[in-house]
Length: 365
Image (cartoon, rainbow, N blue to C red; front, side):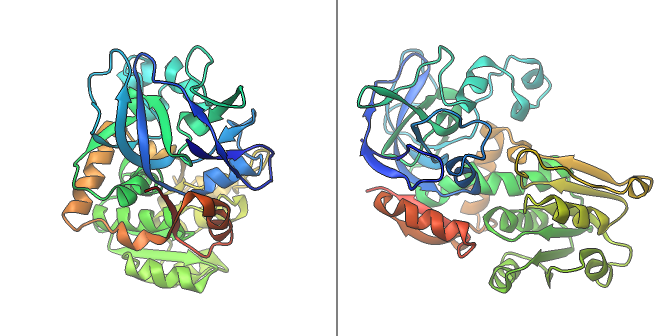
């Protein structure tokens, strides 16, 4: 198959012919229909991802496709089924899964997939006899992927796979940060800092949760215009966030979401909440960075939380998102800035890196 292979950190991806082995027990081979280009892919490309330490690697993880083949023991999907490939496949047996926290699954299969291998340390991809690791067990910048059955969430065959692919990461992360992590309540006020692909879905999540004041902040004016289309009631060119937000909601917002991954911005977002407010770190800072929060701000019972992929349970949340789209309550079409073939993956990455697009989507014939 054709795949975009990362051979050296910081270098462009190489389109190469990669050999694909048949799926093993509990595994599914999926013909990829579309894969979004996510900021996490760019971090991996730059060598800033803690889970990509072995090269070569096939990047891409925000994807959907059609099941081509299943391995022994697979019962929930069959060839011809349309699926969204979830970022994680919870084991259903570990302590976290037993407590309903599938996003914190510590099962061996999931922990191995994060590092790009199956539990026995093998991979189904190779290039010139050398093992190739798929990013977080997916590797969707390719014509095919072999993944664990638990990562496949079946969707209706008439659903647009190039749009539902986005629900696998950017949409579920933003929506889940609001609904699962912060549990935003109706009638409350929300600040969203960073209005790229994930930030727009935080805004959509806030709308669905019933927030009545939704403030979008960014340093790029074109992103703020798009934020308004997704439901923001106010927009700000970010500068002195606590002061700017205080002029809209006296005392600060009930909730704040930082999607930038910049510690200094997260500090400002936290300071822009009112006593009793909740701030969620959605964007992930680079390794080794510290966060400075004045201790006095915590005495107002303010909370600072993190989220992992929107704290989602794939089998529960991805069908909800597909249904919301079907009923016209979730805007997926507006997220796609461009659709490009695999051969243009490096150009698409440059567009995402430069902040010129909400989402670039790699599509396959």
